[in-house]
Image (cartoon, rainbow, N blue to C red; front, side, top):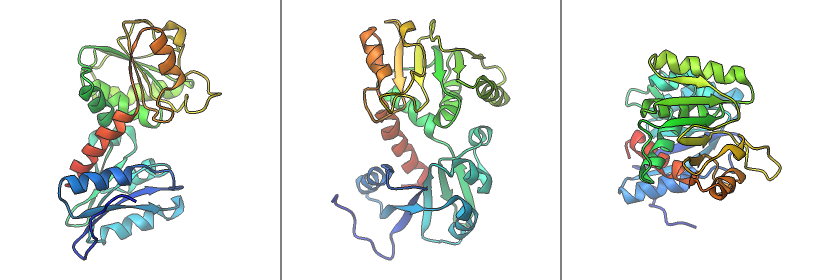
Length: 266
């Protein structure tokens, strides 16, 4: 058991919404940050079924001791539609992964997956400005990462997805928010890019297909993951063998927790 602040009638409540929920890892991190910042707040898990999410969102508007929540599978998209206000990037992505309750009861949504990923790179001393980036994936976290890479100033972003239409749709959404961005749809070949990112879940299981053609990796590339378990995915092992600099998935979560705490006002 970890040490927690004693809960009183003044304690502010934060939640994480998921279904199922036993696998979530964020509450200990947020609670640790709350202690470090000397905030009287606690995050607890809320297992909410998809069909009851609208009623639960309405209840949160009236829960005066509630400050916000992390939103995860399967609620990211539906919650975006239930918020009273969302950020421009979250609107373009069509999903939120955090909500905040304002004093008047309004729910404000945002997505911090991409910002957390870029912040993790920054902490590791990796600047994305002016780099060409290749992103495998066009759903889930990859959506947010794509927007964050463009916002962070990459010179070119290549989107690659097994279903090409999803990559093309993501490109159009990015250009709707960043009309001058250099965004193209590619294939499994990451050649010619400075930064190669796996934004898919491929690599979590030993029998997964590779998210890209790892034989095309070269030693001048930085190869980054969003997967946290295992820490060393087959892609990262291949990248290390090719002499690439590698970047693990965990810094994305670590930095995103700090951003989430800021968003909640901790």
